[in-house]
Length: 480
Ligand code: HEM
Image 1 (cartoon, rainbow, N blue to C red):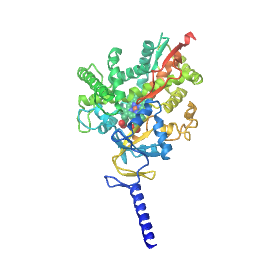
Image 2: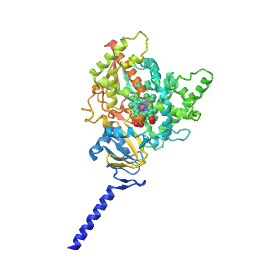
Image 3: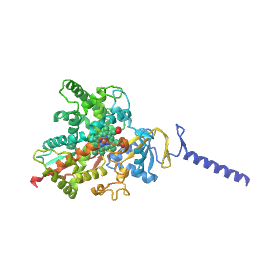
Image 4: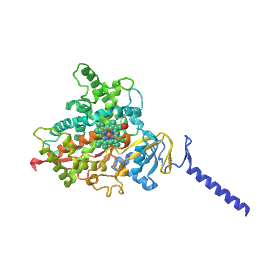
């Protein structure tokens, strides 16, 4: 009997030790405690394929919501793009990450991004992002933004008369890309000639779709195409930069005409000016950051306006009141933009349902606890816009398109995050607001649209786009 009790006790002790061992994981940094629940998938690739393929199938939120349901937790563990990772979900996750920037977490980009943007100074994208942050406020300050409205209106007029007017049918996504790219070329580097702009456009598409991809550099892979495209565009940008230096020296270009002049003429604290290749990388970063994001947003604006006639009527009424108050040839101005309240609520609802960026990564710079789980230093952390945007507790009937969600004080803090939040919130947010509103103004002033493929599939790679680019039939107002 005694032997039986001793064996039972030994078994009990063994079980407890085993459970404690499983419960408390000791990692390399010596930080021992409970990791978030989840699985790490296949060796090396981890869960990257599931993560990317839910997007390719048009449901990036599925990766997140399946795991929230399975682990009933607002933080889960995974393995993405070659890294141990935790996904933080919900408003608390967003709040935690956005308010602990540079305290517990810092920006992190997948290795693929560093390889596509090899800075000439060999610094990591982290340091480059800090430099960029320092430089941008001048370019995006309110006085500068106010000046851009007229320029955006002028380019939008040219864009619509070239690409939309007198056409029965158009494919929206390539046109929206042409519009945002033309604006960026004009406002960042003063390139306005459509032929010159067009030269960059195709490599840009390759670049954007290879940025967040599995980093296999073999002919035919998206990653390989992105590196090739990045090299081509950087070379083109360097030749623009060289010419600008000459023009500035000869007084043919103005020091304030665009972000390129600003970068060339601004030194750092030690009085050093940026190298040409560094400037090319920074401009490339801005073009990438601002190009596909805003064009995806403009495309989804057209999609929802075509699908929802009562929403279209609201936007049309608001924009026509503004249009009718203008003298012939008078450009849109800052005051007009402030009057576009309903249109911006519609655009926000578009950004809620189809956020151009699904989320972003951070890196833990210290061991810390979150929601009862330990996050070891060095782990990558991902925040996901969809984890709040499509949560029925935060946005009742989340799939319903309802711009009134943005009336009054709007959504609760940290729940509507298409531009991120905290110190790393998208610096181009206001610029994007202007270009989207100017686009909406020109669109509804001219046409009603009808989708040619009523149930067109959406693909998210990495931005959401309708699989066939959203072909629509145009009904000009003067013909209705
Ligand atoms: C609808 C349009 C846009 C959306 C939805 C968007 C969204 C975002 C998001 C979610 C981030 C990441 C924040 C994070 O890391 O947590 C970001 C970063 C960034 N965006 Fe945007 N963006 C848009 C347009 C633009 C435009 C037009 C520009 C430039 C003109 C721009 C420039 C940048 C840059 C430079 C960063 C990196 C900032 C950093 O690393 O500190 N974005 N954007």
